[in-house]
Image (cartoon, rainbow, N blue to C red):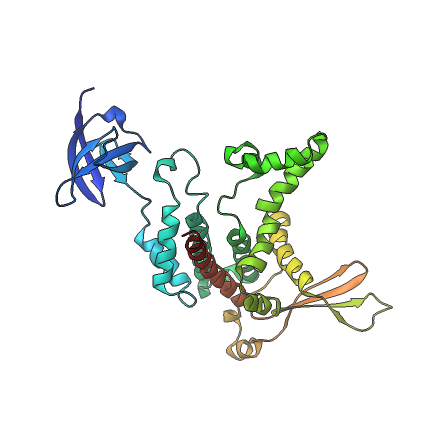
Length: 347
């Protein structure tokens, strides 16, 4: 095959070279030989022991510029945003170290074969930072005023979805993807071995097994109990009070719901907004008069009142959505810290 002009790019530096363009496609492995000063000297499509493997990340056909990377390259602006999101709870050095571990888990040669990035820990971190960024923009007074009573339910929804995102396995996939994925065959085989003679039970067990590992509800509760520090979980649940009385004419002593009911309330809020388009109206406190804002600090506010199982329930909240934002930021910090701890345990 004839060689043509190609402009290889490594670390934002260009290296003109004559190369067989038919060997270049996204994800292709290119072996790079370095000179005595560690600058790229020669490029090969076949294995060379003296060379470093790189992968084609992008091709600009108009000028045949070929971008090569030997590992996933994290955008510096994204790194800065991640550091800023958790700066109160995790120092920059620790965050950068955690991100370096995350990048090692992303395989450049798989970037164009499957959902390598979408199934990565970096994707989890990125989507949570994006949600926090959106929430920050919504707090702008002009924006919050336009949203009016949609402000708080939207903020609450966006932050609560971060709970199940941070509680998801990094390789999350939908049910259909799980059924077809070859890497998950061992999870499916365990079900088949246990239910080998009953096809109806196998179908049900497949669904139950998937939800146990990847389901939204389990991810949400996994975040509350396995990612979030105990003291912050208690602070979060302490921002909710659910009082119960019997319906008239039997109204009597007020009873208070336990932590399980509070966790259920949080999950129900998230799901009602997603699946039923239901929400509890609420303004930002910034639109209140200054005197009212001062009084509202740490004060209980009626959020919901409803009848359930022949009882009257009244839900109170305080310091919302601020406490939810704190929980998400701490949860993100703990997610990064757990990545570091897990890597250390394997060495």
